[in-house]
Length: 268
Image (cartoon, rainbow, N blue to C red; front, side):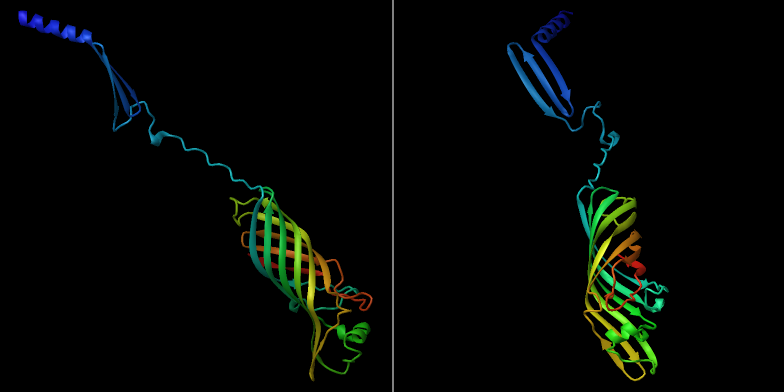
């Protein structure tokens, strides 16, 4: 009995002389021990975090930052073809519409002001082929272009006017359905603008049963023309219409002009 009392007494004395406190932060445990006049501190890094810390699986995902569309530029190459629409009024030469075509290709650059609006600039080259029906019989055309040659006694197989052009266009793109992400070709858009063409090569070609003649005339065939254009597109293709509001022929020499409307397709 005395031994038990002695042991309990020693334990009470030890408890009064030794004090220990532990604090746990995350997976780090700090232990402070006070014994007599000495104080010691021990820091332990544990393998597992404390239970109150939230797990990675329960953390909510952070929202993605919104894409900035302001001042975003993009350049795209394109190619296409169109059909020149005949006009049966007295102001234009009679033309075979299905055989009167244009082929073109170039680059379009877009400067995005927002998701719904962009400025566009276009640089392109084009080829126009107007298949005429009765131009060589018109008195002014005969006098100025064919040097007065009379084709009334010959069978004409083909009479065409051809030009090779370099063009520069500017306008605006309105997104009816904006792209899903920046730089994407998705969405539905409408382009509106003006275009200026330089015809660096212009000629009239007449093929009869006996010969082929080519006629060049820098005075009668205007080198510069201007047009309005509109293009409705989605992803990799678009439908376009172009209306020339200047004369293709010099009206002081040839009072009859070429039809001004072209409709076609572009592929990006």
